[in-house]
Image 1 (cartoon, rainbow, N blue to C red):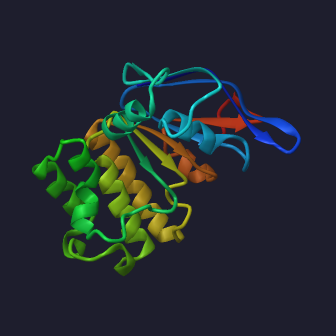
Image 2 (spheres, rainbow, N blue to C red; image 1 turned 180 degrees about the vertical axis):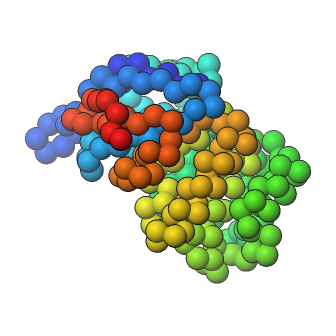
Length: 221
C-alpha cells in the first residue's frame, strides 16, 4: 500500500541547508497500521506531508496504492490527495461555514464518490446523527475530531494519514476517537500511518517505528 524508498528532504535556514529526512525507507502493507514516533523536529510531520503530496522530497521515491508521486504536478498531487489518501490533522481542519453533514461528505463529493449508505453508517457509528445540522463552532473538540474522522473515511481511501489525531483532546475523548478510528479504518479496508507521541496509542497499531535524526529506527513499544 505504501512504499517509501531512501527519502531525503532538507529546508533552507540561516545556517544553510537543514536536513530533516536522511534516507528514510519504510513499507506499509494493505489493511495494516503503523505508528510513527519520535521527538519534536525528528521529521515525522514532514514525512507525512511528503506521503500526502503536500510537499516534494529532494530525492527518493514514494509509491501509494501502486502510484508513484514522482513527477506529479500540482494538479496531479491534488487529484492524488482527493482519490488515494485522506489526512486527519490535530487541528480538525473542518470548514467553519459548512454544517456537519456537509463537512462529512466534503471529500467524497470532491472525488465524485459519495456512498450514501456508507455515509449513513459512518454517521451513526460516530454518534453524529443529532449533530448533522450544527456548525463546527457548536461542537466540542471530540465531536469535531469525530467529524474529521468521518470525512476522511467517507471515500474509503486506500491510505489514511493521521498527524497526532488526538493531540488536542482530553484523555477520555482521545480514547473514544482512537477506538473509533481504528475500527472504521478496518471497516473501510484502509491502511493507517499515524504520527503520535503516545506509547499507549502507538501500541494499539500493528507496528511502531521511531524517527530519530532523520532516520528510521526499530520498534518503540
